[in-house]
Image (cartoon, rainbow, N blue to C red; front, side, top):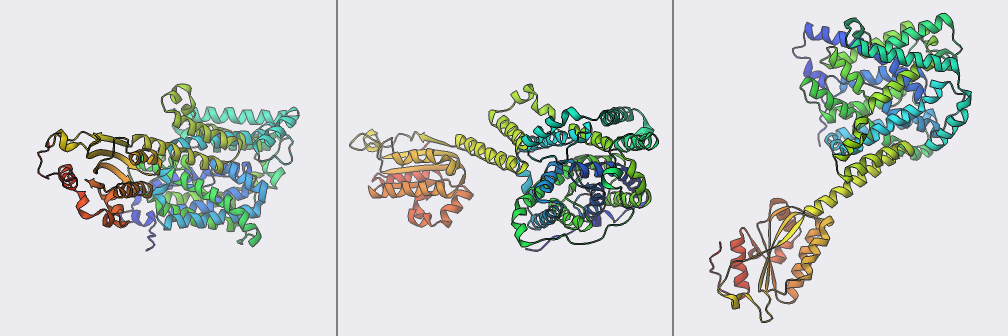
Amino acid sequence: MKLDFRPKLFDTLPGYGRATFVGDLSSGITVGVLALPLAMAFAIASGMSPTAGIWTAIVAGFLIAFLGGSRVQIGGPTGAFIPIVYAIVADHGVQNLLIATMMSGVLLFAMGALRLGNMIRFIPLSVVIGFTNGIAVVIFISQIKDFLGLQITDLPGEFFAKMGALTAALPGLHLPTVSLAVASLVILVAWNRQAVRTAWMRRLPGPLAVLIIMTAVNALIAFPVDTIGSRFGGIPQEIPAFGLPEMSLSTLGKLVAPAITIALLGAIESLLSARVADSQIDDRHDPNQELMAQGIANVAAPLFGGFAATGAIARTATNIRTGGRTPVAGIIHAGVLLAIVLALAPAASHIPLATLSAIVVIVSINMGEWHAFAPRELARYSLQYRTILLGTFFITVLFDLTLAVEIGMVLASLFFMYRMSDLTRIERIALPELAGAETQLRADGTPRILAYKLSGSLFFGAANKLENLLLMQDGHPDVVILDMDRVLSLDTTGLDILQTLHRNLQKRGAHLILCRLGSQPGSIVFRSGFLDRLGDDNITATLEEAVARARLLSGREPEIAYA
């Protein structure tokens, strides 16, 4: 299979002009300054240093824009990765997180190369909403420590242990930290609301505005609160050293599951973001190219100390809203971040962690689709939908995202099979009067010819319905006709039951006729060799021909008038 690797950037360059560049430049600068506080906040919430978050945004952001399959996708660290990355760091350490991220990059590239991008759309909406809202709750809980200034040396990753540690530390909340966090929260909410009505405020993203204001206040007053400088020693004003993380074969096996989790969530988030962007710019992204770009970005970012990255829905929406229309805007956004780090890194030492925590709290609230949990909204949908949605949500919060998605997909598959089985029908067909009642009945009074109309999917989930045919509760006819005009699909289990029915009929000298086979059922009947055993004459194009063939096999004249 030929590798189809064509970044969207190359499709947008022909006809690229001054007006497009001005829009890309404006949006690139805006998204670049917006990404700075988010990258630091997400990194700290994930158990990483703010430097790691910034360089993830720079390296991954550049590669996703340069090589991606979307015209406007902005990549970098996102809130959705916070619980996953935090758990991996807590269980395996930072070095193994970098290795798991690179492994996920290989998986993402392979998914794109094998053209599996469209497969992500098979994940049901109920599963996506369930784990997204679950992640939002996990992110919110993870910020309680820094928001309240609790003195917890090592916050556990597991839900019940984490809640126990937070509860035990709650009496020691730090009032200056709480005051700064609440003030940051109020300013951020007020800024975002006022920016809707004030043009100049829209030019400065709310997270950056509150970051500048609270950093300036803290630099002047020197509140007794944790800052980037006090906890992390500031942000180096230099490009990090390029290098491979230390790895050993003994640890790779333990990192397979975390790598799959990162790859799965990264694929879902990036393609969901790209689909939302498509609807806003009237374009169509290439999901396979996007996955390959995501894969390359996740392999490259750890080489500079970064971690997992994907498409960021909020930053992508901001890019579109401020005029970005080509991948050049994403490239400029990475360049702006690089310039800020090299020029203004020392000023970051005064940034209060409480302010970054407030930013993440707002992100967690905004990322959830909370209306989906309203009783009136839930009542509109089936029990199966509610079970999948709520099950995925609670498992994400209480246990693990990977387990939640796995169980959500299993439940969705089981409910789908049940529904498809329920739609499968086997109905008796009333044949027309033949040459008199005595020619239609056997000596025991049962019909010589029985006909059934099958509809739906004859698969393993509907095996119980097919098995009723084997019982022949309607008698012991000479010929059984199965009208399969409305059969959508036939799997090997359904085929096996048809073959068993044929063998049972053969044992007592009776016959099976299949009529009006569709393309898929006909294909499996032919490929399996069942056609040869059944006989060409016993597969007909119409029901009339099937009845004529049945009369011939039952010893009656084939000429009938069928209506």
